[in-house]
Image (tube, rainbow, N blue to C red):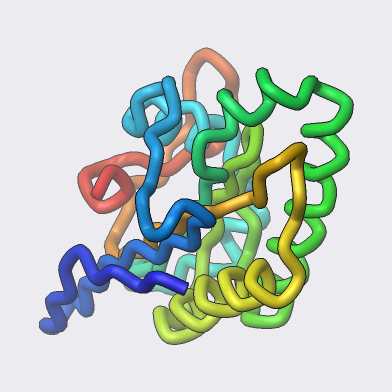
Length: 178
C-alpha cells in the first residue's frame, strides 16, 4: 500500500488532497492513454442530483473522492473485453462496498472511474484506505495483472449547475479540478 500525500493544507476551509495508489509494479504508476483532465470531464457529466442533495451541506463544502483503474486501456486491450468486464464488475462491487461502509455517495461512475461525495473528509480518507486494503487482501486478477486503483481526495466548494445540453445536474469549478 503506497499512500502519497500530494498536499495537505488545513485552514478554515479544510482543504485536503491525497493521492492513494496501490500498484503491483513496485510503486510505479503507469499513465492511461487518455489525459487525466479529459477523464475527469467525462466523469463529472451527469451527476445524480438526489445524491448531491444528500452530501452537500448548507455551506456547500464537500469532500470528493475520485478513483481510476491504473492503465485500464492497456489491460483491456491485452485481455479482451469479456475478461476485463468480469474483473471490472468485481472492482465495482469492492469499491461500492467500501463506499457504503464509510457513508459515501456515489455521484457518478464512468468506465472504471468513480466520483464519490462525502460530508465528512475523515470518512473519505478512511474509504480510500479501505479500498486499497481490500485490494491488498483480495486482489482482482485480470489476465497476468492485478487491478490497481489510484485514488484522489480533496475538499472544497464545487459549483452546482445544470448542463444545458444534457439537462443533468453537474459539479464544476476549480475545487473539482484539483
